Amino acid sequence: MSYALQQFEILNQERVVSIRELQMNPSKVLKGITRIMKNGKSIGFFLDKEALEDMLEDFEALNSPKYLASIRRADQEIREGKTLSLGKVMKKYGVKN
Image (tube, rainbow, N blue to C red; front, side):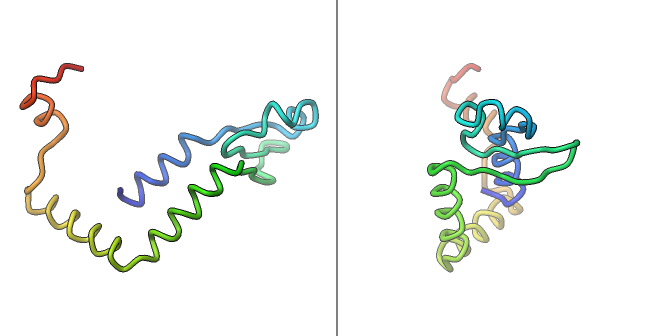
């Protein structure tokens, strides 16, 4: 997965709450990846256990020479046109969306 796609995936999972919401009901708002805002500015982040473990796993993978080499090979195959788009794969196997 490309770095940009990973960033999008993280942002897509992020919840945004105000400091007031947090003060009123912390157990309700602190889930997954939560950005805490005050006066329109980020003042902190909360990561639940699962989100933290996922992030640590990603950091470990990004430090693995074998994993990084596989990403470089995949990127090269994409540049060389050796891959199929999702649409073509779906069409080939008769999958309708």
